[in-house]
Amino acid sequence: MTHYDYVILGTGQALGTLLGKLIPTGKTIAVVEGGRVGGSCVNYGCTPTKTLVASARAIHQARRGDEFGFRVSGLEVNYGRIRERMNAIRNGSTTGLTKWMESTDNVTLIRGWGRFTGGKMIEVGGTTRIQGETIFINTGTRPSAPPIDGLDTVPWLDSAGLLDLEELPEHLIVLGGGYIGAEFSQIFRRFGSKVTLVQRSGRIMPQEDEDVSGALHDILEAEGIKIMTGTETTRAEATHAGGVALETNHGRLEGTHLLVAAGRVPNSDRLALENTAVRVSDRGFIQVDDQCRTHEPGVFALGDVNGEGAFTHTAVNDAEIALDCLFGGSRTVSLRNPVYALFTDPPLGRVGMTEREALAAGHRVLKATRPMSKISRAKEMSETQGFALLLVDADTDLVLGASVLGPGGDEIINMFAAIMHSQIPCRNYRQVVLVHPTVSELMPFVLDGLEEVTARDQAAS
Image (cartoon, rainbow, N blue to C red; front, side):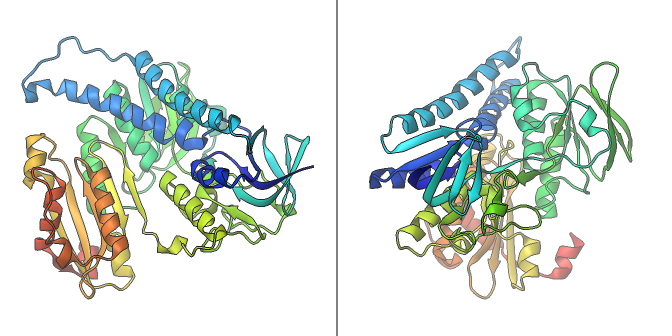
């Protein structure tokens, strides 16, 4: 059995942050990976999908040429070239990360799936046995399939399978109206596929307030995406033409390809955690304290597998918190505000509480909204869909949450994340001078429209 000072199980997005801090210590580090180096973000998530978003937006803008004063004749989508670009970028990230580890003297990359045989003892691939003084579980999540009769008999795709598909789907059925479903629906519609988005609940993006999810529904539908909300899928079967058919409470639906984007499950069930003191929730997420420590001394769980966040930036933050803990700091998970983006076009940026959450938490809420159609920079770019929405605590003058659906929303939201983290009162933020002409310069002026919201107002919406 080989002993290491640090063992990292999985090469997801916490890895780079961990290695950046641990390599300079000169201590021995083992990294265990049974799949593609880089985890889901690099291989199947952020990197390839945002590359596709860029291609889809360029195609969409070309189709709008008349609006901007030019004409593109004979526009043709080359899906093979789109995939080449995507693969070059994501494979470059994977290769670079692998070379970094393999060229670093105090890092050993061990290929294979790891499982615990004891508190700090791990077996890799059934043969290699290692031990770590400190262990980081960084194994992420994987797509899950809903319990639909017959689904296991049809060639459904998860996000990884869709990215590996070499031909453009003629008719893509997307099962699930969350982040993954919404983004892929718009991407492939812009590439030229017919797209039907099937959502079980009464609206897409149900975790958002109704005004946000409603606006997103309208944006996607205006691009020709058929959206079926309140739709229960009861059965799946293959068609004679080699496609997929779904039986729903709204009738039969047939397509050439099926993307299942209905949730993810943590990769904790493959680790033999019963051989440790590590505990998991009833959903399989590894339980951690406020510094990402598990119940097994010296073992941390970072990223999606701990259920404390489902994004690359939260995984990176988990790594920073764990390292801070190891080196005598006091950073905690509970101090961060939830912040994320939906990379549709226009994108949605979100931070803090929704209106519903703020009212449920007992805050006296002030709310202000400004449509993009009233922001000069948005009009100049012909990007007037969406709006900015701010929620403020009437008693403390602090921002409770913000939603920016519109051009640059995914970037602008970071400004509000910084404001909230720094606890800057709104009256101070309103005095800031920002660059003109930009979309973000109007964000302080949104505060001029603050009005108190009641639970009755929320119920009415």
